[in-house]
Length: 325
Image (cartoon, rainbow, N blue to C red; front, side, top):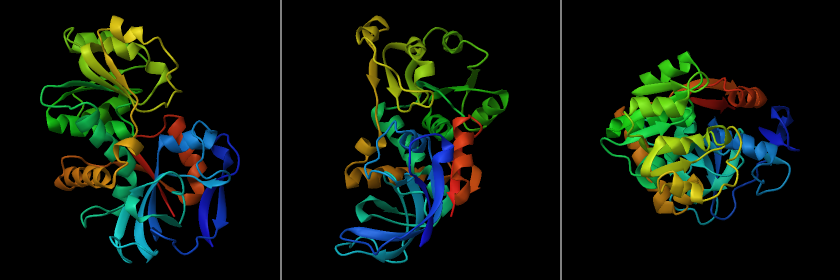
């Protein structure tokens, strides 16, 4: 029996319970791993409250990301062996001392990436990789607006976009978070609680506006985000921290300047094994070279998962959070 954090009913952070569970031997195409770190992400709260349905029913082990060492391999597994250090993003099962997962979703870790770094960056870092390289191709001189710039995705995105040569504008909730975003590559920060972020974007860009807005906030920043985008620019909604963007009249995109709008997820961008491996490889290279640093700013014991969720949802965290089994 091993410790795991499960959800037996939908609700607030307090529905997360520490249980002892049995982890069986790996089946066809599966591997078993001992976990050294588990990532904490906003998507975990969506499953907890029922915004996203659990693909395995109830109860389920929370968490979508982690890193550990392979302790057993099932029939048909050839690419991964016992002793390999791996990391993954897989729906559910992450908050556990041990777990099974499909071998094809595991990525081998280079020696210069720690378990804690990996658990803090697989979901967020690979999200940034595809957002900046595939959803909208950011390049030298691109003007980007990143909402929640001091958050887990935000700090990685600010560094990466800056490294590419973009002009990075970030919205944040406090002066401390503004300082953190600037240390991580944001050229300009906007205190969205005190300032009109649309007016500030117009001022910062001298009326040119942004080529792309990356929005993980959702309800609170829409439709104002559209007013920050130049004609033919792109609105990328990749999260719903304040609630989902509700249905809107698509003609709004025409009146705001023939804009493009998309709601991408890592699941689709990394659905093929080769895309998963390529996305992770680029991430590992950026982190390994020092171009992108992974700030693990909150570390909790596995039993304190509810506290981790409370602080995440209460905007009390910066950068990445992990659980340590």
